[in-house]
Image (cartoon, rainbow, N blue to C red; front, side):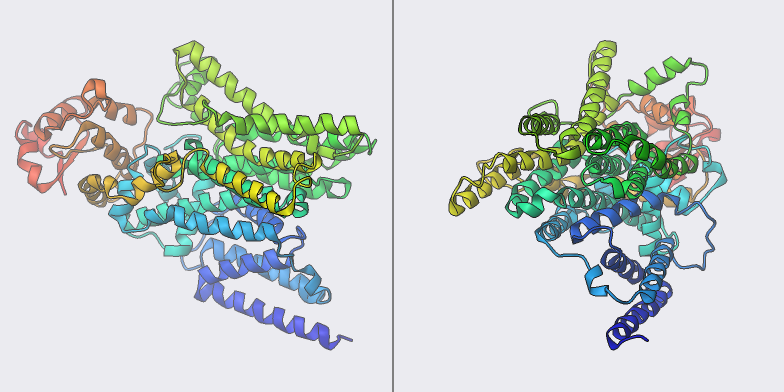
Length: 640
């Protein structure tokens, strides 16, 4: 017979369940928020709130790549709302059958949860300059090359079109599926190009923020910060510096590297998974590792190699105390392999991307072309910030040596260096190969180095904090001195790359400078270009073709920035059009990239080489654009 204590929780849970079902249809955003709160509160994936946030975020980021796998009727609620409502139904259904112990199931609010809340506030402030209308958002998206391509892939999910089926061959779509599902949740069915651009930018920033919160939650929920909460302050400051202030991660939203940022965060979580991986956790931890691997497959598969050393770290940490550890790990390994396999089956084959445009070349030549790809990317990790990745190797090794000398079992903690070491070796090998082949670092070598710093810093923070605790560095100090030392370390770690805001005479960090640029009126100098791009995309109206936007007096460099958006709107991102754009309108400084364009000259030159193309110009430039064209060519000029 149920007691009064069990009846009350059941009534509360039933009300929440009904509310979730109603919200799914009436207010989908509320359904998602309610679903996340219920799952975090009632599913005992960890004893702490920060730990549960990390686990739920990992599963959400990894498994949302399947959001567009099934056909979805237009009159159904958004995919995210339905998924979270189903989660609420399952969790509350389970709890309704087991109403006792509900209070014990709730997570513990600890100092790490407070630190995570601080980071959430910092992220809102950091990305706030992106808030604005479509033109405001687009001029900031124009700062990077890749934003247009990712926008196009998201739109292919939002507005499937047969002509776009072969575009972006082999490129993984996990990030894009999540962004598209968030756009569906927030703004409903696809609307105008302007509304889609704004929704895309906000969705991309939301995914990046969630990824950073996820990996931070995993770092701060480590045992060391439960034992020594005072160390949370310098730990959080270090993470903010690497995730927001160094060029390696600060460039992500500007250059359009959101999928890469998500993958690097997932790899950072994978590197920390050996912590707390005991015998009873084999199935669950394998599933989490498989989910992280699946998320990487769906975003930036080059980082998948980082997951390989994780089970080795677990085995090395447990083999002395558990003779049958290797056998148990092998028996439960399929639980981790399955999510990764499902992700591989869900995504286009990466081999298509490597082979794209090189059908007549050998396999080695294709790989060589892929690795030596040139592109805009920056890194601070060729300078002193490489210490973050180096510390991720050195600190666990130091802990291992210390434990052997003291005969203390620290488990997998001493083997956390394996994943960062592999990433360092891989990035070093790629950079060395690029240096030998072309005499300079190229896009993928630098990008893997950026990922190494981002994924390794979590290991470094945990291992260095453990070292400080094991050696009793803080316990020897008086309370007041201890607080002063920690406060000083926090300030140093927050400002070691520069300050996040202007604090003369200190220099600003690279990330702080990018944020200041975004918050300033500087990018708005391209406002006429952004307006023309939006108008051109509306004029194209989903008709596939080869289009070139020309604006009299605008530099070739800015024409190329705008041109890649026109390519995306024209659903014509073939392997040759982007290079063709840069041949027709050379955008490098040495080839006159900053030279203002004469519409009449460029229109004639483009149509002479690409007779099937269409030229898009403003009504004010129409006469000038047609002045040197034949009657047959003049009909290929479109007005906005």
